[in-house]
Every structure is written in C-alpha cells, then in structure tokens.
Image 1 (cartoon, rainbow, N blue to C red):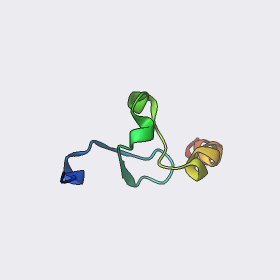
Image 2 (cartoon, rainbow, N blue to C red):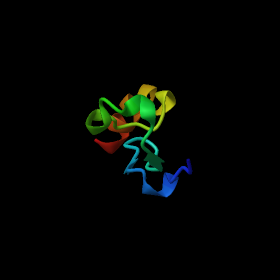
Image 3 (cartoon, rainbow, N blue to C red):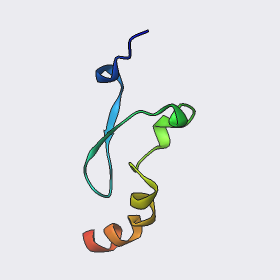
Length: 52
C-alpha cells in the first residue's frame, strides 16, 4: 500500500508559525491540536507575552 502524505491535512503552529501535518496520534483530537511539538506547547506562554 502506498502512502499519500501530500493528502494529509496540515495546520500552522501557533508558536513557531511553521506548518505541520496530521499524525495518527492526533486522530481523536485534531481539531484541538495547536502546536507542532511538545517544545512549542511548553513555550506558548512566552509567545503570548511577546504579542501583548
């Protein structure tokens, strides 16, 4: 079976502004995913303060 990764949905990370694509581990909560990695999730507060 061939994989068609170009057809996967993607989003832009709220912290680093880089695109990231759907992963199977996000299957149940893709609508709620906002960050591309745990690192960005940890650093979300520093970005929120710099935008204010």
